[in-house]
Image (cartoon, rainbow, N blue to C red; front, side, top):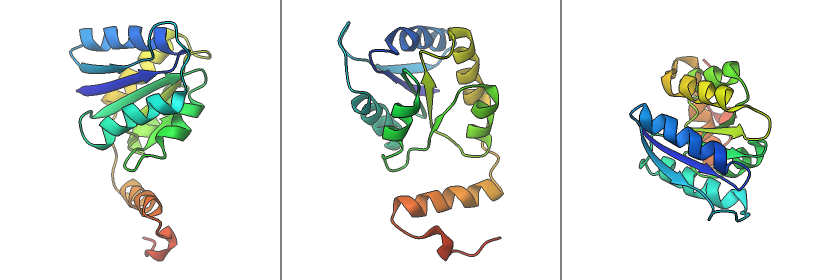
Length: 155
């Protein structure tokens, strides 16, 4: 799978280690990191990773910052990105099966590397369920386009 992984200064070490393990597992990884030792603003990295996911250059993105929240907020501003702040295996699975998340945002400060690796692995293995969830994604796309999602019939 083609993956894009990005981090701010607080997530660099986690992103590098995650990139190494995913590459060893056979994935193609593009890494978006600030220059060594430099602080950066997380929206810039979210823009880069979200952009390559949105335009199809990567099938999925992983963003790592202190809490995962800032990256998630920024990435969700990009059309076509469905970013989820994921903090355990349940949110990882549901973000994929119900929400078809294409960018996973993770905390470098609050989660250990083993849990992060399990979360990402679960996200990569979990398919989207479709069905009623597809209708909800269509409504998210409507909101992105400035259309009231209540204007469609409920099934």
